[in-house]
Image 1 (cartoon, helix red, strand yellow):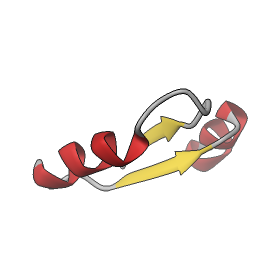
Image 2 (cartoon, rainbow, N blue to C red; image 1 turned 45 degrees about the horizontal axis):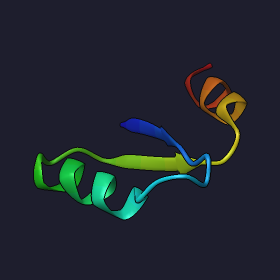
Image 3 (cartoon, rainbow, N blue to C red; image 1 turned 60 degrees about the horizontal axis):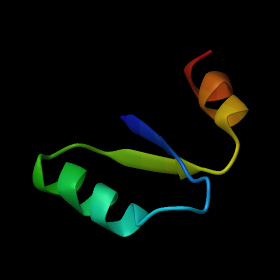
Length: 40
């Protein structure tokens, strides 16, 4: 799984679609600390 931090400045749909085409699962979070809690 690939974590993507949404900092409200980019086109996340394009990023997610690119990873999906590569067969990768993504998760979008607005707080980077949530990524840390997901892997702990």
